[in-house]
Length: 360
Ligand code: DAH
Image (cartoon, rainbow, N blue to C red; front, side, top):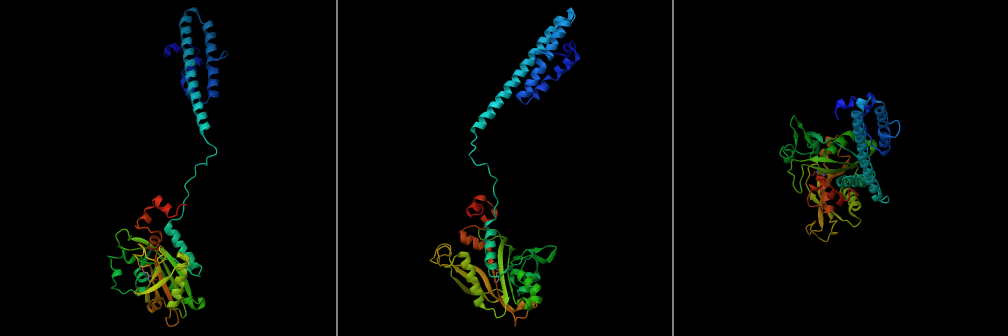
């Protein structure tokens, strides 16, 4: 139908006819469509009814054309409304079918719940165990000075760990580095608390955190890993205190039948220095793949605080003594969970984390 046809119509009906398609498309419910139907093709007062009246009143010579046009328009409106009605009814049926299929007894979809990472949980457990012995928590920065990371710990200037092949130094600030262990927290805490030491009567703390070494990543190495450092300062502290404390902690961690042994070892910041083995938590010391048949697994480094470390912090080693230890969190987690590849802890594959009990 072209515009010249519409010019025969009363202007308001011509206008309504032009916007019919648009109004039809806007009808998103059967109710709206019924209202539109009434307006266009209803028995009374509709555009179609008024067209019939206009037709009757029209001069004779126009009746033929106007009659044809009126019929054409009415049919187009009826067909459009019918098609839209079919569409809306079909949509209503589909929705009703879907609703009938829904099982209201099923639980609603739940968002995934987050959980602490297995390494974090092990670290928290270690901290809790020492907290129960009165150790408080200390933290130090991951960017450290050479003085805290090495000098204050009696590590000599020519020690291989100080080399740029083992340690990440900051390019713009060569005196700064990414700490290679949590032991520099010892230096910070000792220096900070030295003036109050008499009043406090001693110091006990644990320091968990990230450490960095220039190692290529492989199943047992990572350039970033976690340690928990521990330290106690008091009067007349000896190896027996260290041994009793660590035995208590290892039994809390691995179970009451756990045994420990100390083997002599060397760390510049302790004298004597030792390595602590625990009876293999997987085979209870009988010998298995994890302990390589020996019944023991090596867990941490420890010893009595070297007098130079106390002196550096301004503490008199004639009056005060103490012990220190440092444990690798990943190493311990791998051993306990028999995880053969350290990288699994950092890849965040949820299947692995769930296996570790991390997402339950
Ligand atoms: N800092 C040592 C390391 O990273 C671990 C260590 C050994 C810490 C002996 C100590 C200690 O406090 O007494 O290998």
